[in-house]
Image (tube, rainbow, N blue to C red; front, side):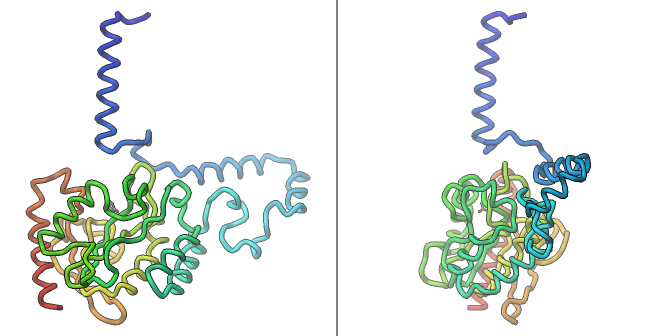
Length: 295
Ligand code: URA
């Protein structure tokens, strides 16, 4: 049954308005609320097909070297070869070795560029490591790149980044400044955009952890600010929520030295909940005061 013409037009207009609203809200991919691990689904399908296959075929494939022996396969178990399914232990060991070998932020970028242990690399356009001045006294760590960051290859360049720049300006800092005392160094817990801007999984943050720890060592900041729960939980090894933990100084050890760490609200949260900006302002005033004390 076809709808009367006026209803069709109305529903077309409504659909276009809804799509445009989705675009404005940053919804640019049709993705469910729960992340689907398609690599795992593919591996399961493949395992089922192998189990059902006659034994001769299996022998023939092995004889042809289709599946490398485990000893020849440093990155993934044989059933995962070619599917992008990674062995988490091997990925973390690779990440630690690569990160430890970097002696500058540029080398760390190159090390990450050669790292295949995080499946997000397959879906992202760019590797996003850092922006600002690596010599800065203040280092800020966010969650993960979004669509704008993925396009430009730099952290915090979208709407959240613009708000972050205003927050920094309010305490006399500018990421572009060459003076360590008035600049900021910015990075993330994850270096590739999660599809649809979903929250990074624990496996993803664990795999990337050696790289952000090395970035912190190399930048050797006097103060660290964690933007939102993800960096705070990973760096402080806690499951505490950000609303409870924000505004309270913590301490982490960098290059054998205690470094004050302030968890605060993520700018993206503040864009959704502008009434909470006052809390972040309070935290950043505490950061300003601490910067004056330690420098
Ligand atoms: N949100 C983040 O946590 N990091 C970015 O780089 C951009 C948005």
